[in-house]
Image: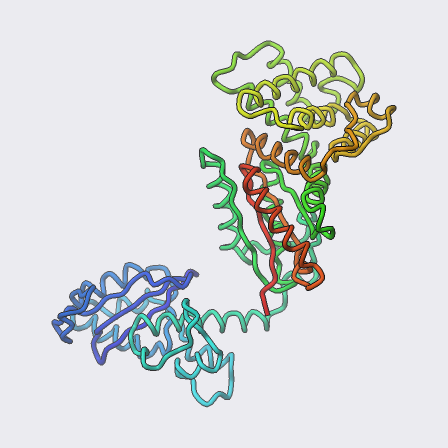
Length: 462
């Protein structure tokens, strides 16, 4: 159940009231207008009945957390009776929990369980990183904020005592399949879903980043696995582990991306799906005349998804070559109408289309090594009909442009999901240069690669 933090002041009737939401934000603060307690010169003054009515609207269907809830309940009861609201009917709808009682269970045998003592004992701080100040206590807003931090700490301590739901299902990559618990981290999962939808709806397809923070083993990669299973049929998911060479960060990222692109999505893999969806979207653009070959290829592509691996023709047949050459030509025309050719962009598109045009593992393996910027033998280059790279190629510049190509193609598909996982080692002293260059590489990706959600996993600092 969603919750809010409530603190009231007054005896026996309400004088002030503050509500903090589940994210720690003060969403309501009000004072009685003086009919009972003389708050003539305070902002947000309201009649007692208005104060109570607005409170009841906000807390509907939410659990109400108070410190020493019995006190707050008595104030609300007397105040409702004073203004003619039926407390008997209301009390069955209001669900309270008490941090005073919860703290006794969580931290037994303390000298006191006052809000001041607990906040000092647990070294709690407000949003301005300030410790509890007794001179500021007993204002509803101040006490509600620290009650929120106390409640969060109690929930964390209780969570540590529970069996780890992911302990027997360690996830090394999000492409794995382990038992999942959808209620766990449901809110965090919805935040990721919302971020993806916002990128898709943004006319500029501006990339965004989300940092996922948690202790080792708390389920960060498991959460990524859930996102993968939910979105893999629509989005391309790219999984990158920690780099280990400060001079080739972008190449490391791109190499891991190529590994992710060959992960299966049903009968196809991610790169197949990206190129097929790109072609389909280009054909469907309103400013483009649909040709008979478009229709023939689209029909064949749908058959391809229905497990007919030779729907576009068998390897090395004239029909298949013509179809894929036409797909490459169509994508190139769209690219030139929307982007500059760049140093490698059209070559990279050619390599991706070539890869997709083959079903034979050996041809695809050669195409993958070419897409990674590796030199082929003359025989291999001739076999897949791709020009060999020169020895002077800059792997870092090449990698950034290749990732950028994927991002720009994805604007015709769905946002890319780029997951940077297992980065804890970058914080070690001997990895300082890698950490610095990794940060610079991430900035370059966010600058040059559109339509992407970057997810970075971090361990809580000591």
